[in-house]
Length: 369
Image 1 (cartoon, helix red, strand yellow):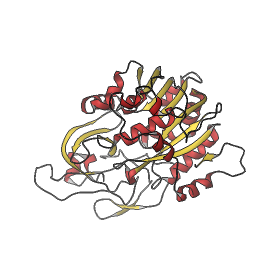
Image 2 (spheres, helix red, strand yellow):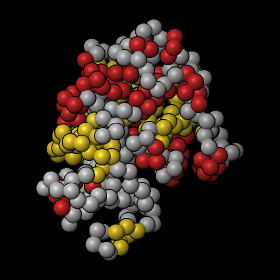
Image 3 (cartoon, rainbow, N blue to C red):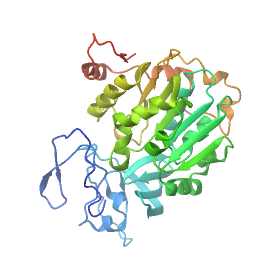
């Protein structure tokens, strides 16, 4: 990241840590949840600031000569660097909100990167897109009205379109460049925008939800980027309150919820907020995505007060949804067995999350399966 773009992006929990500034000096990391940043003195950073964010590396310098591999730790996952070999940079521009990068990798196909953080790759996107979509939609009978927050690549839309019961799909994406880039470089995902049930709204999701009629949606899927910068609002209580208001009784939310290995404090905060906000149930599930930090990503899954929702045992199994298994391509990752297994949590996470709520509390308990 160039200039001062990384300033002012602290999360609410300040973590202690140190990192090299690229000149051998040690400085305090202001937060574990800053966007990826590059070291300006490095020659490669002047060419592609995100390419040296700690997630990607080039085998050659910008001059075409072979050079050393350069890695930088991202303060969002300090002490780690995952490198993907770049065959060719396909696109790199700055939108009004973020830097958008697409490159061809040697092992994972085309890769979409926003502000230095991998959003998807052609090889493993299915593990994320299918899970964040079908975990909520297969947990309620015959969903009809669905809202997607974020999801500008179109992958979640493509998965929603497998559900023949769905009549109306709203998507609110703040960055039109992400949509346009995805249509050009990831057409198999962006085909979701072609579904006639889809209604696109380019703008701020918080404002969109404020103008949404109460109880409009059966399900809301929040496919947002990491909770920094403009996305910080999407992990705070007012946002979750607007979501709960927009859901019908017994409606469901599925929200991206970070890695259990790296961001337990964020998971705790989000679970705590949702426990106070949603009067049905609050669950945490997870899946494996190799190119995400630590190789896993979590989902916060909640229901509003009303008809009870059994998230663990899908009432609307994908295998019984007419035409779903082969709609615009076969499912690659999700099935009903994976659905139930996603709610099985490791002991350390149960122990840490259990500190969030008082066992004697009268509010809905967090369900840890």
